[in-house]
Image: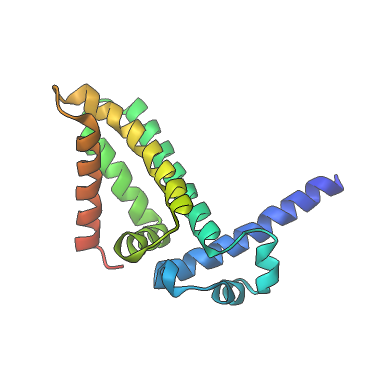
Length: 170
């Protein structure tokens, strides 16, 4: 029981750090935030954060992976229940997620516009994106005739992101 309680407390502490970091990343981008900023926003010491994360890139990637998983799960669920008009369903689901999760959208936009990560961190981030594209590519394979479904999936998401950047203030 005590071990379970400690695990629960640990998860709550991690969540406080992640929420503070996401708030800052959404306002300043990853390059505009340091560990001291995150610690101050979370109300903890910098050393305390290092008990949970190896650095700000690790925090950013965890936030990004969490958002990407949520997007994938929503798209997958909608694809199963709404088989007609798959592109409309896909676009609506993605854009609605970004509108509902404005801090994630802002954080992602700052990264797309300015972000630089190490090769290992970039591979981790790309793994999250690949998972989404793998799931979405199936829709394009089913709906396109002989077209390169991967290119179409990439283009579709690029268009959605471009539209969001153009029409939604970060």
